[in-house]
Every structure is written in C-alpha cells, then in structure tokens.
Image 1 (cartoon, each protein chain N blue to C red):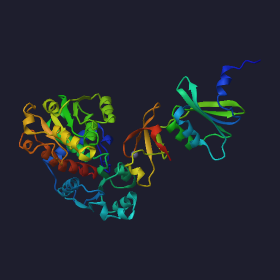
Image 2: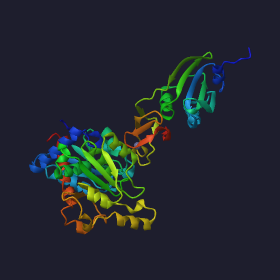
Image 3: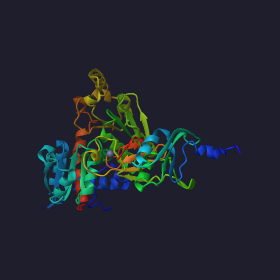
Image 4: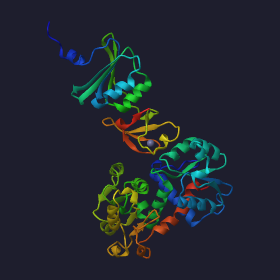
Length: 156
Length: 308
Ligand SMILES: [Zn+2]
C-alpha cells in the first residue's frame, strides 16, 4: 500500500496536530502576523506560508496545538484574515470547520491608522464598522469617519 | 420630527427628511425670529483651537434668541494644558450648560464628546473631519437661491473647484448633496482631486460627477460654483504653487459666459482665489452665504433645545 490519498498529502503540507486549532486560508502575507497574534508563550505552533490554494492562489496555515481560540482572538483574526477558516482538531480528526465569523463591528481590537484620530490622543476605546467585505475587508473608524483596509490596521 | 437633545456631529447622521426639516425651520426662524426663544438657556463654546468666525457666528446666533454664552476660545487657557482629558473637561462643562458647541483639532473629537456628555454636542469642526453647521448653511444658501434643490423640479449643476482633497467643507457638502437631484463638476490641481471615498458615495447615490479640464469650464457650465482655498503648505514646490494659484483664480472677466443665475460660494476666508472685482458682480454670493450661518445655527440650537 504505497499509495497516499491526495487529501492526506494536502494536510501534511504542515505538521499534523493531535488536538488543537487549525487556521487555514489565511492570506499568505498575513500568516506570520496571525501566528504571532494567536500564539501564547507556551503554545506549540506550526506554520505554513505560500501554500498553493485554489481559492486564494497562495495561502497560509497556522496550527496551534492543545487549545482553542479565545473570543477576542477570533475577532482579531476576523479583522486581519477575514477569509480564514477555523478547524477544531481532536485526536487527529477535524471535528468542526467554519469560516471565521466576521462581526459588523470591531471594538477595541485595533488602533486607528489616522494619526490625527482622537482615539490616538485620548484614552478611549476604538471602534470600526464594516463597510465592505471580505476581500479586502474595508472598515470605517466610528470616530474620525475614515475608511481603511482592515489588513492595514495595527492590532491592540 | 423631534430633535430634542440630539447631537449634531456629522452630516452623515442626517436623513434627507431631517435635512429638509432643518432647512425649513431655518427659513421659519429667518423670516420670523423670536427674540426670547432661548431665554434662560446657556450655551458653552469650547474652542480647543481658535476659530473666531465659527465662534462669533454661534455666539451671535444664541444671543439674538435671548440665550447666554460661556466658554473659552483657545486650549491654552484651559486645563487641557495641564493634561486634563477631553472627557473630564466635558463632565465639568456639562454641569453649567444646556448645549455645548465644540471645536477641536482632532478628528472624531465631537463623537467622543457625545459619548460623555449628557447635554447635546454641536460639532463646530473636529480636525479635518466634519463641520456640520457649515454644511447646513451651504445647503440652505443653495436652497434659497435655487428652490429646485428641494422641490426636485430640475437637476442643479454644482461645481467644486480648488483643493478637493483636503477641503473638509466640500466633502461634507458632496455627501449632503447626494440626497438631492444634482450633477457635480469638479476641477482641482493634480494631487488635490476629490478622494475616491466621496466619488464612490456619489456613484452609490446615482449622482453624476464630471471632472472638467479648467476652472473656466466649471464657471460656464454650472448653477453654483463652490470655490475653496488652495493652501501653500500642500505644495512642496513654491514655484508650482504660484503657477497653480494663477489658474485657480476667478476674475470678473471670466464670468462673461456664465449663466445669469450662476452664483459663486466660498466658505471664507478667501485669499487670492476670487479677485476683488468679482465682489461687485451679481454672481458673488459668498458674503450672503456667511450671513446664512446665523439662522442656520439658530435653527440647530433651537431644535436640539426643544424650542422650535
Ligand atoms: Zn479614527
């Protein structure tokens, strides 16, 4: 039995994990940012970049061993990688796979890219409303009313 | 339509019906002012950056209706200098006033203020973002000159000329005009064209926007010419600025082929972009436009204080 099913080959582009979370379909240039964002200091993280994807051309994959994402991490992920999917892995099996939920509003997730925005000068929360999505996701600052590509924002 | 206690922060917060209501209340107050309408009310003017023109217009509007005014006119004289947050300044001032008019150098400051204050905030300009009372006065001016704007009986052609990239007044006016039957012409120096965000907004509202090659084309083809100032600091090369300045200047001789009813508006202060010899022509309307600031601000304050 030398044959390997093509599906299995695809999965092994990045090391398989026994339990944890797989974030797939990340726009390739955002992969490192996603890994840094999601990984805690003790997490084992596996990462693949520039993987071939029929959907995105090139994509990134990040696998975090041993845990699921917090609600806040999911929001941050939605902002910088709205095309991503989140799979939960238990005992090497995908138990769920869903697109990252993109909320209509992001609160205290990112800083405004407008240097003159009041939120960059007063201690105040930030808020962005989605104006168009997902590729690229466009958001508008509730305060200064400027629109941005979500990928250009700095996460808090 | 109830405007009581409502903040006036951004033209984007107002529907077409609300804009029409404000314009009609402005007309009402201009034709029959009630000199004690705001007696016993106090307006605080918090000017974290100076703007004599805007502050005087708000203060005159309030006082002509019997109200009183407190406030400061530059941040140097307040505790902001000592590091007090904007939120804390507002929590103090709201104890003294029924309405707060605020001007601030940061974009979005008025929106933030509205989340703190229990009394209504009127945005008198927040950085490069919004200056809604200016937009209402521009609209009121156009509607008074051309009733077609509000009755929709004819498509009005409105031209924007000058710095269309950084000019906050033209952005807000464009957004507001998207509620009406208009066609827009634009003419701007390279690099200072209308930002895409606003062109998209016009397209979404099915408002046609045409870029015309010269100021003369704009003059000859419009009902209203909205002129703005070119700021020298936007041009890295002083020679280029001199050159462009010369091609963005209206003089009386350029008005020969203009439609008889064409009117020139300008948010003021003008520098060189409108020659003094234009002032005496029937097309000049910028000083009358500034005068409309009083009834517009009276209507806004009257409405949010529940007196109109
Ligand atoms: Zn902002």
